[in-house]
Figure 1 (tube, helix red, strand yellow):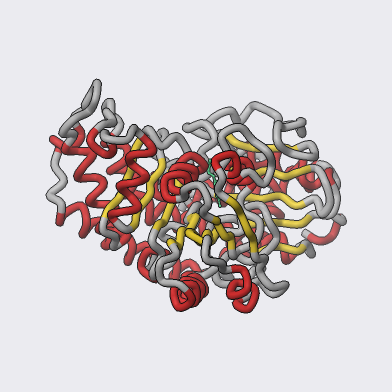
Figure 2: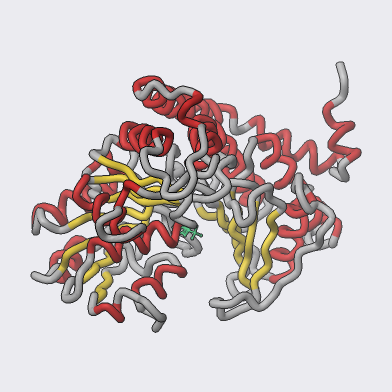
Length: 430
Ligand SMILES: *Cc1c(COP(=O)(O)O)cnc(C)c1O
């Protein structure tokens, strides 16, 4: 038999690092099986929706100009609605990213005098400007939409008493962010989201519950829309694009709210009827078809990384045994050198730009230097293997993606190898 290690060796992985990785992999068989089973479930869920809608090659034909009667676009939106079990969906390349999709969902359904209430603490960084938590041109605040926030409890649970106290007559929408994003709180399970949505509805059934679903799609068998969320929103250059969608976002939910979102995205009077797809739809369909397995690969990578670095004595979040509700893995290194070495290793494992050496830089909107590793086919695509770390305490690196498990694995081994090559690990740990 050929020797698997020989190819790892030719790619700069030492025998000790390889063996250490194999030992960790061996201990993860049961968990990987459970992930494969989830992927199987979600694969069939996606396949069933494609078949039900009789997807055919006519649906991949480009539309141009206004994009009237784009059957491919309309069918894709029905496929999304079927997968998420919602009345309607808006899935468009004109939704330029996750932040944009969220901004459209918010600004179309909130009117002057309304209040938005976040019940999962501070929302994702880029939403601060959308909402107006940080002053910004065109924010909801500028349009007279107020904002209130209830933090999660220290153990990561919803603060039900706080939510009750914060709901006021003008509370029009409640926002829940499923993934921890770049915070050190746990990601919310669908079970927890279900309880929170029911609780909000028990206080006032008119409140629109919106879930920022970024990084959460296909990790569990249910989505927020299955447990009462009125709007579920995400990015196509994360999980549901399967690595193939080159741009895009989705909003799924109740018809009335989706319609408003469509009128905000294009123009009042036009709504869903316009929006040429320019030949992009095949990648949306095919990426969606692959997404459950891609997510499974990314999840295996995250669990592998958690187990590797926890074994080496670092704090990892989620920890090595916790259940997973998104694809992000954080490793707290405590020292900047480790963060930099980790990111160099991830970059060196990339299929694109592997020869580039990442360095910390002053990124707009951040209060510390940030280092990013991304050698992706699609710019900024974080379903592809990527990592980033702000150069400030606790010197944590956030790691996600990998279009295949095998690629995530070499990426993590490379990160460890880089840390070892820079003599950062105590000698006899490995
Ligand atoms: C990535 C992300 C966003 C924003 O998506 P972009 O595509 O980067 O604009 C919003 N919320 C969460 C939780 C995310 O992970």
